[in-house]
Structures are given as structure tokens and as C-alpha cells.
Image (tube, rainbow, N blue to C red; front, side, top):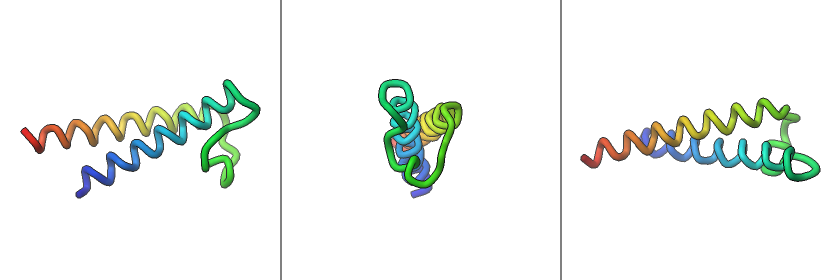
Length: 68
């Protein structure tokens, strides 16, 4: 159960970080839900994206180990 929660949080964080960073680069402003609550700088979105990818990778790795 813990693995699935970490995996889900990682994917959501990666998506929100990617949307925020992509919106800043390719649009007028950040996309996603975080912009409604906080004013996150570009580097913050990049960190959120990287942390989300790391959590999702760790969750996927632990899920594959438990199956083997």
C-alpha cells in the first residue's frame, strides 16, 4: 500500500511540475493546479518535476521488486 501511495504522489508531482515549467516556457504562465494556490518560481517547478520523477521511479522499482 505504501508503494502505491509513493508512486501516485510521484506521478502527480511530476505532472504538476512539468505543467508549471512547460507553461512558463511555452505559454503565458504556468499550467496546472499549483498556480491557483502558490506563486512558484521556474526553479521551483523544475525541482517539483525532478522530485516527482524520483518518487515515481522509486515506486516503480519497489513495485517491480515485490513482483519478482
